[in-house]
Amino acid sequence: MGISFNSANLLNGNGIDVNSVVSQIQAAQSGQMTVWKGDLTTLQTQATAINSISTDLSNLQSAMQTLADPFGALTALAATSSESAIVTATTLSGATAANYSVVVSALASAGTVYTDAVTNANTSILSSGQTTGDLNLQIGGNGGTAVDIPITKGSNDTLNTLAASIDTLSTKNKWGITASVLNDASGSRLAIYSTATGSAGELSINTNSQTIMTFEKPVGGTDAQVSVNGIPYLSTTNTMSGAIANVTLNLVSADPATPVEISVAPDTSAITTAINNFVASYNTVIGDINTQFTVNAATNTEGPLGSDTYLRQLQSSLEADMSYATTDSTSVSSGLTNLGSLGIVMNDDGTLTVNQTAVDTATDYSPSFPDVLASNPSGVLNFFQNSNLTGFANNFTNDLKNLTYPVTGVLNADLAENQSEQSELTTEIDNFQTQLAAQTIQLDQEFDQVNANLEGYPFLLQEITEMLGSMSSTGSTATPTTSTNTTPTSGNGVSSTSSTSSSS
Image (cartoon, rainbow, N blue to C red; front, side, top):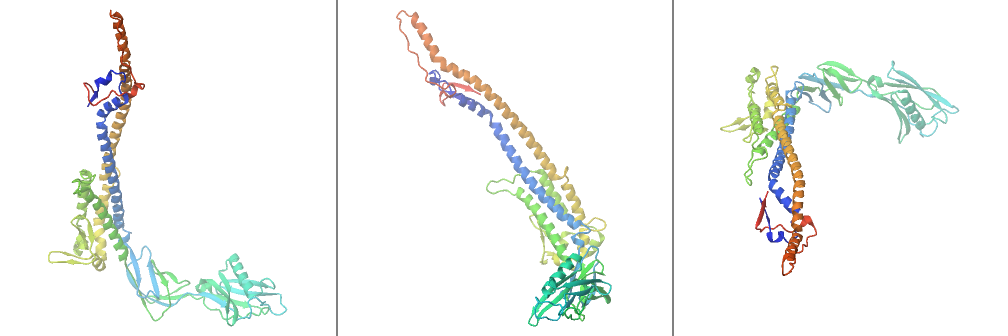
């Protein structure tokens, strides 16, 4: 790049614009800097895309590990009830698939005792002339806890104050009872309840003749009565564990005349969710890859990773995994050897779809996944994982482990190479900027001197003219050109038209 000066202006004492000259010289050398910065931006954009796909690949790995887990969703069992208004059930780890007939004859109940009505809950319940009395309460039947509740005039000798006193003493002594006052048209009654159900909550009461309270016969405090496949069971609560191994029965109501079928079978809801999560995670990764390889019609360019060989390698590996067919004898005999046989089909763009209804045309047939799962849940399990560790999930999980390995995983290797290139470019840019800074100082010094010389030219010319004039016999004196430049580094000697050029 040439830098031009107007020769007519150079000798008038105004000098040159040093800053402009130095900037033009360095601009000619900064083209490579622009290229490097553009390359660095491209690498940063590519790194962002790699990290995004890497995150989605990790999510796919997690979804696949769920399908490969021998204690995960594919092996989960759920219990269903034919009469959920009578009894429901939940499974625990270790439950086995089976059907059970359950009859609920009685629910576990909490014990209750209550008094006949008195006129006013705020008047004394002590007999006339008495200042003290007692309540003797038995909690938990004959072998339970006997408690004595003293009644003192002016302290707790009304129904309201006695109920509050019982609650305070129960909390303090952990008796497991509560008390309240019931009010209706007949008057007020004291009621005492056990907080435990079954025989542990059975209550009985005795009062001495020093009070006017009369208690009705205690109610409740009985165990739940259940039979499972004809075998009777008692339970102090309405949540039973033990009647069916690793299954909890939740008793809702008693109906001795209605047997309820409890079925423990594969949890199709959990299995379906796990399959859908896998497909959604896989499709996210494939969608990421497709975006990079799709040509933008407006710009006729692919995505930032369109030419990335690592991404092509990942795409090929995933496509190979989806075409995997197990040779396990059990899977072969069931006909469930590949994803398509389960109703999980590959689309033209490489994504997957879980058929909800069967596809049956003259040229194509693909079952629905819900139908396959309902008819052969063990076959679905064996396709994804088996004792030989050759199932689809076993194979794919191993491949994903290699693809996401911190050092040699395909995207991690891609990112490492990208970061290495970024580091090299950053070093080149830093070094070049340091070089330009040093050159700026040097050029400023050189052109400051040139500018000083040009600004001093009129004075030199005056001296020469005066010298020549003194030697002239005529004695004439020439008038020199006077410089008007007052700022050495901001002269106006640079011009786009010149007869003199300096090239950087």
